[in-house]
Length: 70
Image (cartoon, rainbow, N blue to C red; front, side, top):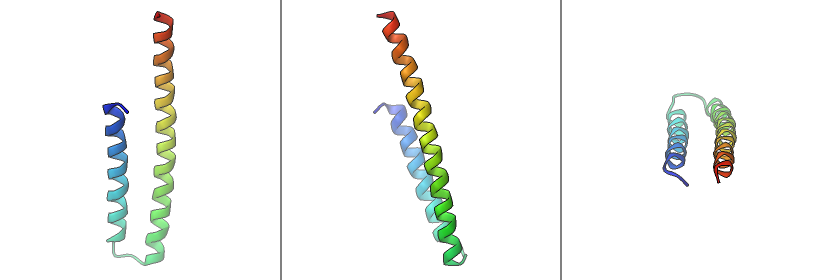
């Protein structure tokens, strides 16, 4: 994994942990908090899938260019 990949992974994990802790300590009813956590987790999962697909496409394009030069 490249340094950029590690940074992106760290940011995503940190965001998820921060959001979860923020929701857990918020003064709301448990069922509402759990629903918000589930919504945020789904959003984060969707964003992660999109970011992964974009990175994969970019790396594929980079590999294609390198193969053309070889």
